[in-house]
Length: 246
Image 1 (cartoon, rainbow, N blue to C red):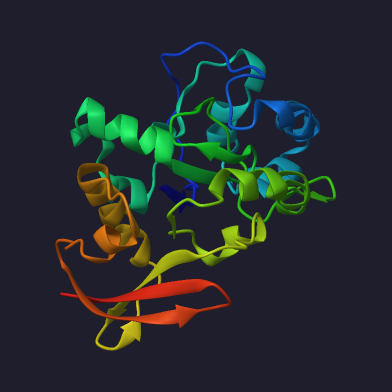
Image 2 (spheres, rainbow, N blue to C red):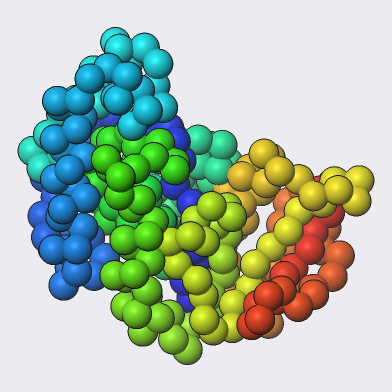
């Protein structure tokens, strides 16, 4: 099983692991496709004017931007699921999980980073700040990653149980072309927007413990604070499981 997941605008600083390399990330054979983007970000974060840095990072205060003005290739790293710091990751509560549960998520979660592209939850990355929807000069990273990585993702996910928990924006990085499951959360009959991140985090936490082997097991999981309502067809090949927030 693979779970497709979104990153977070917030990032923890620091790290306890060595620098990353061409072998550090998912699809090392495609590292040369990531490298121009990483090099361009590295150049901009250290050399761009303040207004360009504000657009690149989404941070207004120069004193906060300075915290991210370091070389990507010589900065300490941590697993991506530890690096990200936002609502979904707050509710994931990664630090509360057992070593075995963490390892499951490190191997079975694919996070779609705005800068690094598709990476595993356990892939170790440095701190960075690259706002969703920003470009590197005129390059939209989601277009590059979709073009260069889709066939490899297709091959990896073929014949796998896939749960797509990404926010809508991250579908721009990769379009699933096989059977998959996604989820929708309702409150009072209306779709939950911002707080959907929290429920995605809760779902990911539960999956680390249950570790479903097939679609039936996945469909039959009970999640704290959620009530299953129904499943409906979604897009061409997907199934959407709909839950009521209690």
